Length: 131
Figure 1 (tube, rainbow, N blue to C red):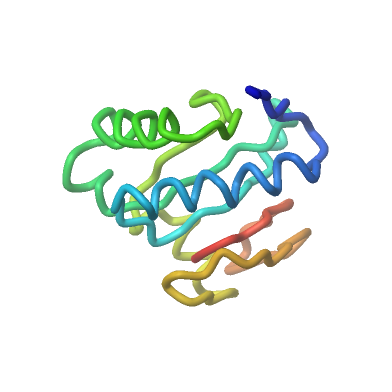
Figure 2 (figure 1 turned 60 degrees about the vertical axis):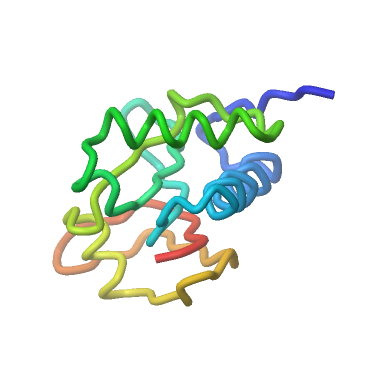
């Protein structure tokens, strides 16, 4: 049965589970994912699932989104591609999060990171599976 996860300004249990499922699907197809987290974007007051992969640098963002889309087609996760962002491991946000939190390479745990300032940058809210 197909279902769709509605991404809103509140991080729901369905979104939390969907994020883990997206990460598992990407791992299964062999995509190198060095980070994965939900990030709250104050404008437009919405959460976005961020995938951190060296594929962004090697192949460009368009090909990386295509690889993510293909992985999502193999499972019924329900997250729209428009709710997912793909960024480089050298992205400033990734570097800030890594200064504050480290997870294991294959981790799919959950670390809530709310209202923290790292190097003078406010990270309003994030749910980190891997960083």
